[in-house]
Length: 448
Image (tube, rainbow, N blue to C red; front, side, top):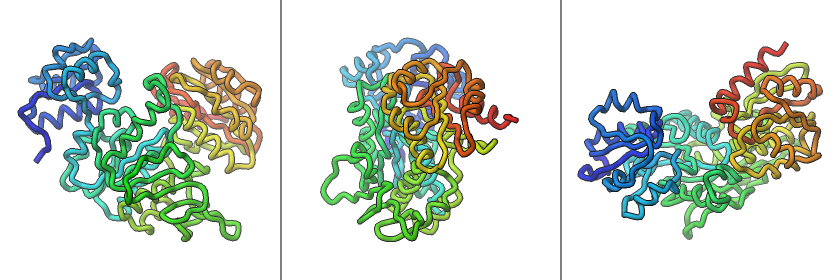
């Protein structure tokens, strides 16, 4: 039985991927609803009109009187709750909610809930693969891949959900079996008033969580916890009780749990300290929901990483090329720079730049000075990054991605790596980060 009152009127605000999943969910359950979108021609409009011609849809500027006809608004993650029309409706008693709230009310299996400024897609995918290896009927999605409501099924034994801060803004009670915020660094500062507001949005993931996983190396990931609530930690230091980390024995580094070595780090196919941290986070989450170590470790040995996330493309003339186009914020770029930098003998040639979303780039300076030979800058906010880096390393400004690759190749020495890790969104030059990464990989693959 669906946990939703069918005699009330709802409005789905936003007709993208998650909005269309809401339409399907509500229609299947006979709920009375309408749709609104601020865009004149939203992405799923043709599908809505074809499959649900009876549903009223209003496109363009939001009409407060129309919104106030609803008992509850299901707001798309892409639309800020600060939007005046939404605030006006809320002031008149209309509840603001979202697809994750609705998912949580209807999910019958335990939820592993994962957020963070960086690495959430990698860790979500890893935990999903670990659950499959353990023989679980698992559903993986949310901000990654399939929208949450499309995953609901009585057959599912475990949900593994990637959740963004935008999704969490409208999530009032998730009730996850285990929840984590992997890390917190500045992102989406064009939407939030500052880091504290962004941090608060992320921490909504812990509402109703039975267990939590915390990053020992990031104090901002630790929630306020009730006494006796199980807490597992991960980090790159040696672990102690209820902790996952790294241990060294006879010159060999191991992934470890408490005082037990689990597997040598060299058996991981993904490179860099950041990927070791991702593996440890996934182990902590899997362990919290009872996945056996043999299945989890087998998954780690087979995992080759996700596309556009510090993805090795090729080696040419002794130089490795990495596509980290998904690094759309400073924290993600830092994870790649530090992770690869401390794991190689040569230096990095960093390709960065794009739409900085109002970020402060000064946090890049120390790591760039330590691990980079040079920085090649492109895109709208190249100048802001250049100013923030100062004289840390030589800088080259370019007008295109092809020029960036050519300049990086000429700057790199054998043993170095060229790293596309922009620390910026892509919308000033590309359709999305995927297109940016694909064009980079294609251009690198055809280098003679």
